Image (cartoon, one colour):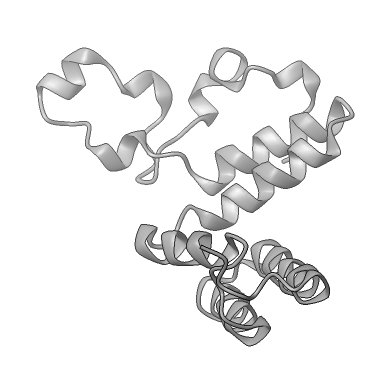
Amino acid sequence: MTHTRADYPLAETQPGAVTGKHGKALPEITLDAVLAGHVTMEDLRITPQALQAQADVARDVGRPTLALNFERGAELVEVPQDFIMQVYELLRPGRAKSKQELLEAAATMRETYQAERIARFIEEAAETYAARGLFTFRF
């Protein structure tokens, strides 16, 4: 389903459609449910579907770059935090030793986590860093 400007904010216009990882809808997440132990942290985590809905709205209002960032975020939801931090460190100029190191991170994103947009972003960074000589440790 493609969302539009009319759907924003989703939590107000379609609260039943906003769900957590286990499918619990926003109206089901109440203080009573938390106190009863029926709501877990997984019920509160953002989902790829929610981020894609935000991307749809952003694209509809003429914010394609913001939409792409939401789509990238949607790809990262299931990527382990420690791997995200490793890649983040590699993307800091002067931290990766070589273009190949970034390309390997991109391949892992693509093959292991199906994060195609993120993989392309890392590959673009690898090309840019190579052109600008940013692989030398500078600190």
